[in-house]
Length: 249
Image 1 (cartoon, helix red, strand yellow):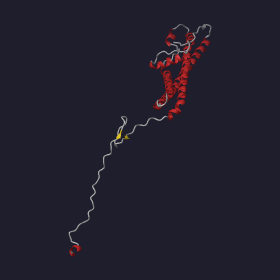
Image 2 (cartoon, one colour):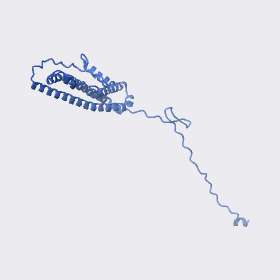
Image 3 (tube, helix red, strand yellow):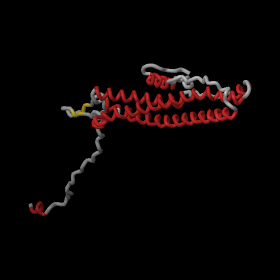
Image 4 (cartoon, one colour):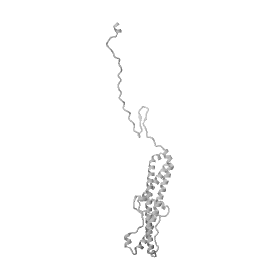
């Protein structure tokens, strides 16, 4: 089991988990090495050995239950991280209309969200190391079997405890990153909502009556002339019959 200690051990372990997303099944480190069992087990009676075996089984069952709880919470954290990333991506066009400080805050928030998603996904896909008893080895080992089973449980439960402890810490770090990213975005959120996107350019009329259009817009074609009907003047009817005045002349 790979152990990470020293300065910034928690950050280094979280980085290991994020990188483990790219290689599922790779061994991930822990914060401590399980303590080896060195006590003398020969002094216990068969009844005492039965109690040790029973408690060892219960401890392994509890460790597996804690692993499932951690994975369930990691799935919820993954959903929250994806939702935050969607919000950040939606507001990107408005953020870049603001100044440099707003862009830096947005970039840091996006980075923290990506780390949150990586840690949560790794908790769901990375390998979890737990101690176990091999039935074939136990059956082919020395006698009595009950004593060997008790000794095996005493040796193996420490591995699961370190695995569960490390995964709970990684989950807590992921939640902290998600909350920090949300708080950072909340600082610039009023400015983002107040920012307006640039309007699309429209054709502008020129002095000669022809509309000019920039390269970024599409000029609209003039409407085709509507067909007009030629009005026929109303002509008064003429008659060839002479009027009485003309006859008098």
